Length: 201
Image (cartoon, rainbow, N blue to C red; front, side, top):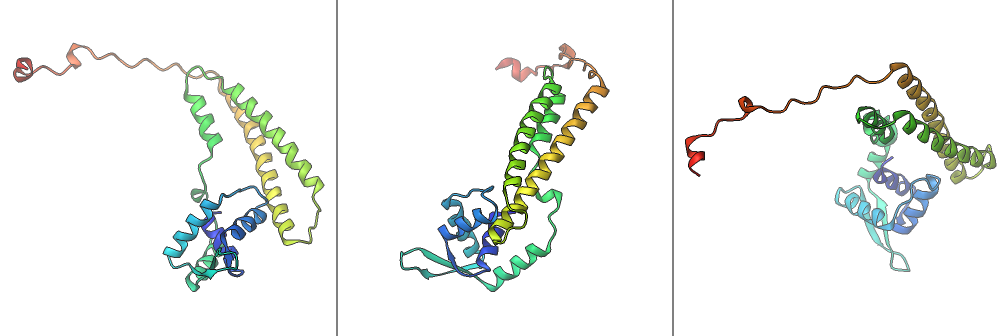
């Protein structure tokens, strides 16, 4: 989820000011995506520039209040109606790290996998503890949102552990990698001949 669309979704429920949007954004995502107020106001400025929100004055404490425009409402509907594809998501840093480990001489890939599995299992245990402590059927909307986010994190951690198990098995069955031949050293024949003009310099 982008910050841009998250703020638009909140503004579709009614006008809000920056600090209110930050608090509700973090509540809706179960505090798994903390925002600083600078991110909120810079995003609001871009939304205002794109005519998706409008500033409608200030409240009694002088805080600017924003409301969504018809174009912003249409953008929220488009966002909710459009599936998220894998290409829309950030690259998987762990997959890139393991790919680089496999191709970097001297790296113990099995140890990298084991260290990651230990850390992921530790995180999974903490997520499971939080899930067990949370109500199974929350009454409050914010608690329901947190439950969904929490379960998503649990499923992702479980999938990561299974993938790491697969990586370990694959590396063990593949055996040691083939040794690449060193790159040839350029010889005299590979060196460009010096021109008369270059020799005179």
